[in-house]
Image 1 (cartoon, rainbow, N blue to C red):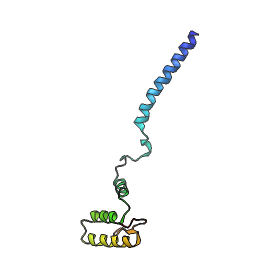
Image 2 (cartoon, rainbow, N blue to C red):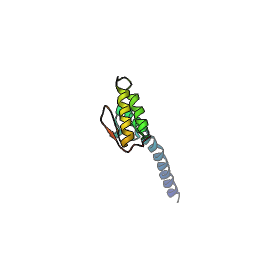
Image 3 (cartoon, rainbow, N blue to C red):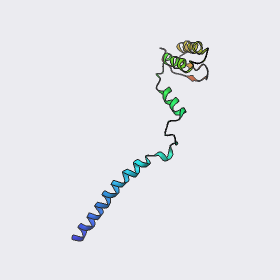
Length: 107
């Protein structure tokens, strides 16, 4: 009976020790083996996340277009033309990229 208690206490202490060690190594790895080395701070990722935060309305995309093309001479005119087309069709076409963003709210 005494030997079973000793064996059980060793087994329980081994389980407690391994559970204390495992989270430390898991948080140290934290799944970073499959991510890029920049940790999600690449310029492309930041652009995509910023674009995703913009509401899907013609006005919001036109404002974003104006911000992005502030240094271009015809940027305001091109963005306003894209906004006018978006208000008619519901599809925003990027004036410089030519990308189509469908399903816009006409606001």
